[in-house]
Image (cartoon, rainbow, N blue to C red; front, side, top):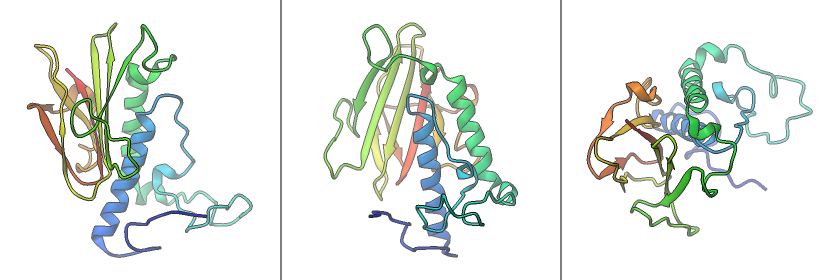
Length: 207
């Protein structure tokens, strides 16, 4: 019982818009995995766009359907490099190494938002969500915005204490290598709001 959507066409396509959207969706899912709390688990080959051609039960297929395609290392080098940068970001960011659940007393503070600050939309029809992490011990902030809508959406940006600003570390709508940048090299973001491209994820950290 599959409820899936393949960006408008099932199977391979030469449509450049569909191919670009599929690539962005893959980047979105990888980003969400790497900014979630806990140990990320990535299926071998997903870092190079591995496909089972629609088969969701290929464990007994000892053939090309389930084998690793080594030629994809070069063909999908852009996705591989993006995944490497995401993994580095996860491993080098203390928020994701925290062993206690976020929001437990005395630990990292978790706040939920929508396109408006402190107004998350938990309805079935919601396409946007944001959350903010604050570590009192490190005086560090991280803000994540997710836009699953088919149009651009403007999100409120939380204010920061004087002397601090946001840096955009991940933007799945940006061209590589700007889709994932080391925090110290990431561009500064000013203003009280940010427009996310349709179907994209943006992660910011304070500087």
